[in-house]
Amino acid sequence: MHAVVFAYHDVGVNCLKVLLAAGIQVDLVVTHQDDPNENVWFGSVANLCAEKNIPYIAPSANELVYLIPQLQSLAPDYIFSFYYRHMIAAELLACAKIAALNMHGSLLPKYRGRAPVNWAILHGETQTGATLHVMQAKPDAGDIVGQSSVQIGPDENATEVFAKVSEAAVQVIYQVLPELMLGKVPKKPNELEKGSYFGGRKPTDGKIHWNQTANQIHNLVRAVAPPYPGAFTDWQGQQMIVARTSLKGPFPVQLDLGTPGIQVVDNQVFGIGGDQKAVTILEWFAAKQ
Image (cartoon, rainbow, N blue to C red; front, side, top):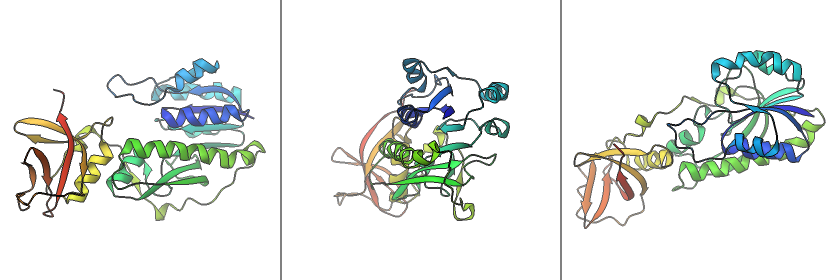
């Protein structure tokens, strides 16, 4: 079996390793150049390709259209997309002789779109996972090929959950590879009407609104905790990144639960939500200017 792989991030590294170990001939990898303005805390697909002597390129989104003749010439059995960030045009997907398949970091049809792990935590989900699905022009909308679920602990942050999702993605590949190697693609409907779609997130979306419930504030902190940009608030003229919180208490009786915002009692920092409940701020630091 021959494949062209669009890949980035830890999921890209780990899933590409599984394909290689299974004996799939990867003729080309399409990846991204790292963004100098992004905190790159994850594995490098480009480095893996260099190590394994796999041809790789890192075109911009606008340059993808020029790959059509190259992919038509390669005529891969499969095209895989593992956390590749650009939309892949239908003309490119059509170059796969058997199927074009994408790995998405949620239990589709829930959390289609961008930043699925972050959105799931933000909404207080207790479960998410990884889904391999058939790619089509509409994002994350094709038939489901395989899924694996993971639990989200009440205090786990996005990096911790993403590590679980990365492992789930590998498990999905292991599950379906035997059939894929025979040219068979197991499919079940991706019932979009039962799911949800979310767009990308910006660093400014991490602003804490103290009129929200303490639980919502805790979930925001978990969802964007460093190495993501972080939840933030102002305190004594300084923007502070709130990196870790707890809902467990105990909370001092001196707290004024009727006044939302930051309060310091006995050198401990607390946040009061709009529901008159508190979070303990376990870790915070001044934002870089």
